Amino acid sequence: MSSQPSSGVRASDSPNSPGFLDRFFEISTRNSSVGREVRGGVATFFSMAYIVILNPLILGTVADSAGEFLGGGDIPNLAAVAAATSLVSGLLTILMGLVGNFPMAVSSSLGLSALLTYGIVALPGMTWADAMGLVVIEGVILLILVLTGFRTAIFNAVPAQLKTAISVGIGLFIAMIGMINAGFISYEGGPGFQLGMGGYISGWPLIIFLIALFALFVMWASGVRGAILLSIIGATVIALVLEAVFAIGPKTGDDGEIANEHGWGLSVPTLDQEWFTLPDLSVLGSFNVLGSWQHIGIVAAALAVFTMLLANFFDLLGTMVAVSKTGGIEDENGEIPHSKRIMVADALGAIGGGMGGTSSNSGFIESTVGAGDGARTGLANVVTGVLFLATILLAPLAGVIPTEAAAPTLVLVGFLMMQQITQIDWKDLELAIPAYMTIVMMPFSYSITNGIGAGFVTFVIIKLVRGKFREVHPLMLLTSVLFAVYFISGPLQDLLGAA
Image (cartoon, rainbow, N blue to C red; front, side, top):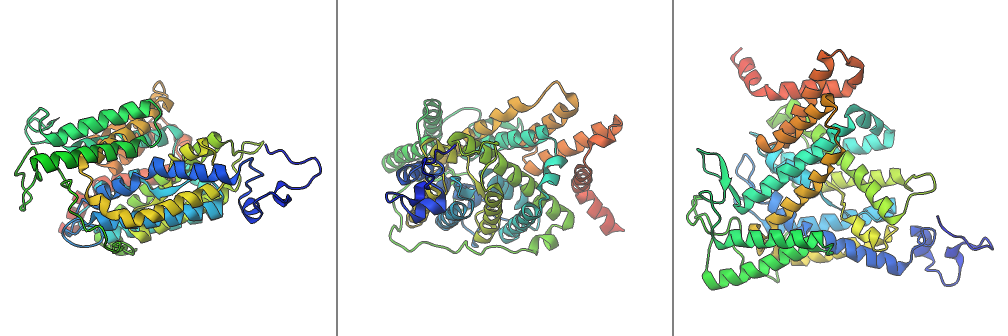
């Protein structure tokens, strides 16, 4: 609640007010100040700046079905992905501040980046441009849903506990990816997954992973601001020293086969970089709106869009509530000011992320750090966005960071998403069993889409067999049918081809 002067004169009209800034961002109305907004914006940036390093390590290190990496080429271009991430994040964060007037920074969603990399681009026939085209389509649909008010249909379609299970499952999946990327868990056939190489921990890269992991755990438990970024920087510095002293080298040779099981996984930490080149923005515009429909089929493309739409939509709402409660931004009725404009800006973030080749962009939960440090308005977003734009010139740093230094952050993000598991009522078996299938299928089948589909189909079957037809939303039923078709699409296509 704001306190207005007894004379009825608005605080923004007083001689000492910031004038235009105060009126545009409603700074005095929300009991804030320019200084607090700047401080909050800086705090948010430092709490989530790791995305400039981490997003390229997710999106930029996996080739599509054509053997090309994001932005084109047969080798990863992490610097280009980092530059695009900085640019798109900066512009969209500023857009959220100007349109939504809400202190919620916007950047590439790690969950959706993982979905694109390991669940969509991996599909036979898919390319990175096709995948980003699906992100653009998802963003357009999201924008239409927000503008028309049809977002309530999405809310009602999926039970709340299944939404929670999706987040928990993605958390497990992301943690598993982090451990595998670092070599902490490996697969060598036979016994299946195992610890390290050969069932034990050895080599400096794995030691770096463990140092970063436990340092991150301790800092996070101690409430250290910027713990994620500090862990990455600290582990990278140690890795640079170890590489300079011991010349550890890469794990794989030029042929892609393992030549040194104790080597670095994806990138060798070295300062031998071209530091003064202009930023590579070749990733921008790497999207093809209609390519996926031709390459993977209408059903698979539609399911991919729906999966991203579902995750993006509910992630936003959770983040909005968290930021507003942390900053005390809700009005006397518990409503978030300009909520529709916030959702419009978020939908534009999905569209812009796809067009920019950086995955769907959405609100970051780390924005609660800035809200806790004083941010109440979109001015804080402008500060955060400008800082993101400044990091474009530091994009070559992405090539210095070894996977073993950044992978622990995936493990921590997995933990943060896992915490929501307490919101599931495990005594309600009609919901608990589908939630369980959703959670376990994601890491076990190494697919986010499979996990969501398994949960949806299980939920619908249990309800229908038990005669509870009215408890199944028509959109939920339709989606489950699409998932069922998707699961048998391979044999079905073979059957149709033979016919």
